Image (cartoon, rainbow, N blue to C red; front, side, top):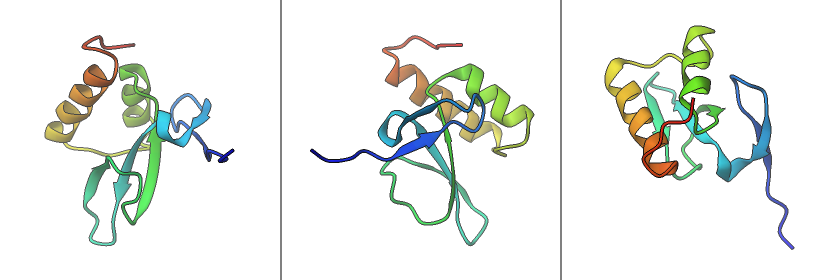
Length: 87
C-alpha cells in the first residue's frame, strides 16, 4: 500500500492528503502559479478547496495573488466541488 504524503492548509491548518489540497507555487522568477500537477518547482503553499481558506490565506498574506489568479482559483474550487463554492 502506497503512503500518501500529508500536507497542511496554510489557512485553516487542517492536515489532508496532498492530493486533496490545491497548491500555489512561487518559482525562482517570482512568478505565482497554480500547480495542477503537484510537481512544479518552487516554494509551494497548500490550501483547501474552500473559498473561506482562500480568503483567509490572502488576508493573512500566506499567499499573494492578482485578481486574475483569484478568479481562476475560485473557478477551480467551484469545479472541484461540483459547481458549489464552499465557504
